[in-house]
Length: 198
Image 1 (cartoon, one colour):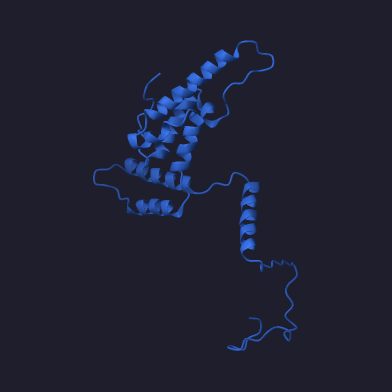
Image 2: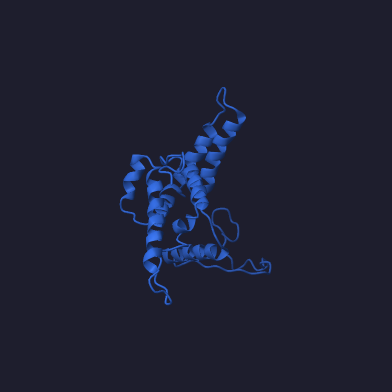
């Protein structure tokens, strides 16, 4: 197995390219499921006699091979964070949370970078397109993703509950019938502009 499986060294700014290359490499080695957690640490099966130790050793070896590949493809400043991780999934999840930001300042920085990009003298259109695509990809990753309608509804409900806790005077009314405007005598009249209703 190669000590450095991909040529891209993660420096923080190139996370999208690094993660894409590393994902392809790990899938090619049939190790991606360890990173996603779909292939967790083996546990003893009821019908198993003495196979667990071998399976555990194989899994642990693959897990640490992945961690070594991660470590060998980071700059030292990124690498400092990884001594505490013993599972490839934990290290991967840390990178995802650190480098796929959804805050507005990060999005603003990406949009500003895109606005400043210009095709350099002597730069081919393919090179320039690749450069722009990279930043568009980072911008797409920085957008929040809703994996399901129920997740979106859950978030909206949570936000509504926070809002209603802050202001107890929220009243929501819906009606399919058009509003009646015939009886204006009960509606207040503005003392400034003398209009009814506000």
